[in-house]
Image (cartoon, rainbow, N blue to C red; front, side):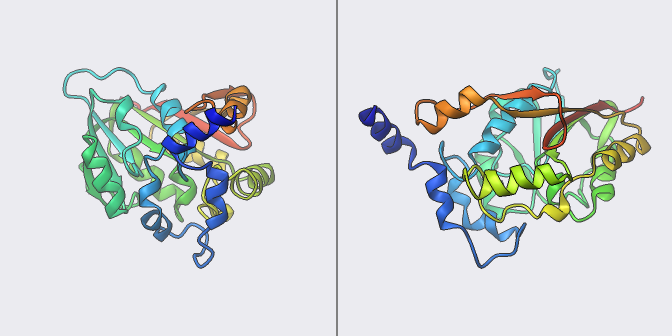
Length: 254
């Protein structure tokens, strides 16, 4: 087993939990500068953003096959982790990070440097709008929802995943995932911005999108295998509770 582990790490780098010990202690929680400092981690298989790869695959499973000319707007696209899963779409990525957008463009994403609270795209331009792991980072949830729904065409699909505003989520997402397991960079989240699920559903409805939520979590067997350095990915599986990590999907009224 040692030889297997050593060969895996030679290819993919050290376990992410080892990386977590090098946290950016001089930054405030949710500081966008963290993404610039960790730009080299986006596509490293065991890098600081590894869980975002797992979530991108789970998010893509909610996106329907593209018809010719279909447009997907990816809010908070990062380095384009969704791109391998939605190749047939005209994929527009919106983000604030210069370096992340550069990497996204290398993977076929049309980059737009902008805040998700003020997206410089026309009304109704998108067949699908994706907001993956971004809503828990914005200071104004209603404004972010309004922009996501504004750029979505009537009949179009909104897909999202984010973190719930609960004590359990703060314990799991920050106390365990960041500080113990190292599945996310320390300080990447400000728990004060975690998402009120009832408010999210109401705001979507106000803009014509009936959002349906479901909880998700990493597959425990997959996670154990990944920590043993014997797999490259972890499936996200449904769970009955939306109290920690959840997905949402809904179509805009025609």
